[in-house]
Every structure is written in structure tokens, then in C-alpha cells.
Length: 637
Image: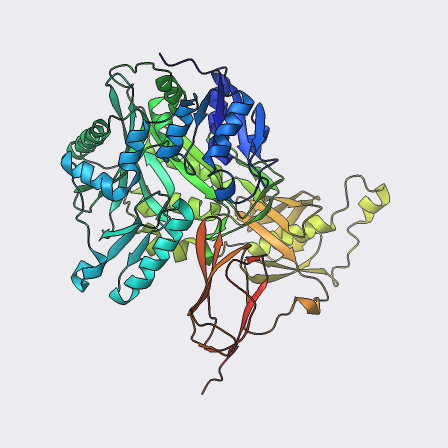
């Protein structure tokens, strides 16, 4: 008989660790966190009853060290280990080691993990079980008729090691890059190819199974809105599926689970073509990032059910009936307009209003580092109808105050309010078509700059009475001038305490400015942190981060033309073959590859010319803004 769990270690970090701890506390379990050195004061550490240090910073030295995690569990008196998702969650050897150490493993049997760990082997199993599959393509014999191709890492998930190839000449380099990224993320460089389905839908089925033969298919989820093959917005149930297709997906998911004697929570993922044909993609033998939308619709706590199944409890023969619709958005610290570039630094404010569920691993004042995924939070809305859930989620995100880092918040709001999304016209090419329009500079930055200037000029509430009364002794003929930059544009504001073209100042305080803009009263919340130069302005017109322009620019801020600066902190993982000072380069040519926040980022030549300096070497750790190389542009004929 499986012993009852009394103390749970979560072999993970961030929002999923915090989320699991929340359920563990509700069930009366003691909680144990593990942490790397950069995570010593992270929210998941603060949320646990006890925490054990994993010395180091890189995942390979910390969260991927199963021996250290098990040692931590035993030292802290835990009797069970929950892997969360990512890291060791789909590592069969780790699952066995947990069990061999006398600990309860909160996950499927190691044999099931092993069977599904390789996507190539999993497809063979599914073919034998009668689950429909896309036929693989041998990259060595691929022809133009096979294009486009999708390269995928055989191990792991999360979009790592995936590339779309539309030109056979690019296949060799894409295979190399996909394999290198897979080795870095999963320690396994095996890559395979299959046809890339244009405008397909990513639909998955949540399953839950016990040790007594019961397997639940907990509805469908649509996860088609993706960037870099990673999900951005998910919802349950998947909208617009015919009943026959939905039932066939449920049946295929149950068949997949039974084929490997599955136990616990898992997800079977499918690609559904535009004409409604489903194909098996993979089975994730763990909890998914997007599990909250299923929880909301079915009124379940999947983590609590994982724990009960691990203790040997039997599920009811049938699951509860679903109600309503749920939508989840992943809030990332990244800049979608700059090739989804991840952002690092201090998150000064994270405040999301509304009747929504927020799963996060951060609070205001925390630092987002370079070592891990840049997801800040998952925001989930549940309502009786899809339209109501989408509207509630968009409203909550639009009203959020997120200061300190560039995020994808505006992209999420624009996506949720896009006519195609509203009409449930979903496919994985959504951002290929609409990214440019969704990342246009937010309007009304000039009005936000005016509000920032008025707030800056307002006397402090505790200033002497004379200062507060005399703070607006500006002569109308000599307005005050302030300059700010926002999203690459500069705004000069000339302001009076009263009238402006199209704008009337109703009140101005340090943190709140009320303006009448074209006859409409608007409130602008203004915040400036003492340890930051940026000014944050939030209103119903949008959110703006403004940087005051100094009156006399620092000449040291100027850099040599053609300088390539590190766009983020990271590690130089590759330098182009043969690249050296004196090399001729062409515009757009990849020169260097940086790895940051689990992804590879290419540094491209800004113009055709001569490489006059190269300061980067493979394996080097670089800081944001570090000079990597210099390209002297060749003269134009």
C-alpha cells in the first residue's frame, strides 16, 4: 500500500512551484523548495516551509541535478517529490531514482515516461495503437515536394529544437541549429522531420488516470496561438470542433494512455488540419503549463488529484461535467517587436486587477534573471461563454500595471481583441500574419509624456504650503519643456498648468494626473521608482514607459558606427566559422549566437562590409550592452 504523503518537495521553480505549494498547503502538507543561487530569494522559496540550496546558477548544475534534488528531499524530511513541468519532469531515470530512494513520485510510472520520452518512439507506439500520425520525412532524401518541413527535437518540448524549413538550401544549417538547441535544453540532440502543416490548429486532450484502470479525458484545449512554437494563449474547450472530431480526439487520447499503462496527469497533443483531420504530435507525461483552463472548466484541482492518485486513491468512473469557457494568457518578459527578445532586470510592479486567476513566480521588486524562461505569470479568466471569458481576460490585462520590464502585455490584449481570435479562427500561423500590426507603437505616447511632465512638476504632498501654492507660477509665454523617449521615439512636451491643445489639466499630483482629452476625462497613474530613471504612465489609453532625456547627453553614450552590442546578458555559444578581424561580411549574415533564457539568439551583421573587431569568444559570458564586434560598412557605389 502506498504511504500517505505528509511533506512534499517540488523539484522546480517559479510559478509552477508556487502553484503546487498552494495546493499542498490546502491539503495540510509540509512543503520543501529547492533553489539555485540566483533564486535564493525567489517567490517559490519564500512560499515554502523549508528550502534547500542547489549550488550554482545554470540549470545543468542545479534543477537538472536529480541526485542533488533527491538528497535535498531526504535531508529536509520530505516523503514525496513533484517535478512540476520542464527540467526533470519527463526524465524516467530521475523518476526511478526517486522511487528507489523510498520517496513517492508524483507522476506516471517511469516506464510510461520512457515510452513517450522520444517523440519518434512514441509515434511508433501510437501507430500500433491506431492513433493517426503524420508520416516522417528523412532529411537526407528530402525533395522540394516535401517542403515545408518541421524539424523537432525527439526529446523534450516547449518549442526548443524546432525549426520550420522552407528552402532545401537552409536544411543543413537548420538541422545543426535544432540539434544544438536540443542538446542544450535536453541533453539529447536527436532531431527528426515531418511535414509542416500550414494553418493547422494545435489541439490537446488532458487525461488523468489512476492505478485501478480508470482514464479520464478532461475535454480539449486549443493552444494554436504560438510564438517560436511556444504557446501564448490557450483555452478550454477548443472552440468550433465538431462533436465527432472531439469524440475521436478523446478516444485517441485514452488509447494513448492505455497503451503505456499511464497513471497521473498527462496531455496528448494533436495537430488538426484546416479540413479537420487530426494527427498525433506527442504525449507530455507531466502537468502542462496550461492546465488551469481545464481546472476552471471542470472545477477540479489537478495537482490535488495527482497527489491522491499517487497515494493510491481511485478516481470516480466518470469525471464531472464541464461548465463555461476558460482562457489563459502567458505574460512574458520579452519584446515581441524585437524578435521576441527576452528581458531581464527588476520587475518593479506586477498588479493585475479583475476577477481572474493569476499564477506567478514573481512579485514587485523581484529580479528576472538570464538563466530561466522569461514567463512572468499566467492569467486565466473563466466565464459562462467564450466571448465573456475573452473580454474579461483582455480587460484585466489592459488594466494591469507592469513596470520595469518590457512585456508582451499589449500583444496579448491585441490578440484577444483581434477579429480572427474573436471569431475562433485559430491556427498556428496567427502571429506570422498579424505580428507587425499587433506590435505597432502604442498611441497617445505624447499625452502620456505630458502627464509625466505635469506629475514631475507637481510639488510633493509634504512640501511646505508656500511651495504647494507657488508651484504653478509659470508664465504662459514661457512654458516648461521636458523631453522623453518611448519605444524608440522622442517626445518633447511644452506644458502649462492649465490649457494645452486638445487637453485641459483638471488636476496634477505626483502620482495621479487628470486630464480632459478631446472632451473626455482621463486619469493617468504615474510612477517613478527611486532606483530607476524610467517613468511609468498607465491609463485607459495604454501603458507607456518613458525615459527622460538629459539636457546634455553624455558623450560616453555614443558608440562607434557598426558596433554590435549584446542585446541581453547571455553566453556566446558559437562564432561563425572562419570569422576574424578582416573578414568580409554581408548584411544579415549570422556572426554570433547567444544563449539566454533557454533560447538561442543570432547576432546579425548590420550591413555589408569588413569586420574590424571581434571581442566575443565561444563560452564567454557577456553582459547587456557588451561590445561583441564592429563591422565597418563598405562604401556605397
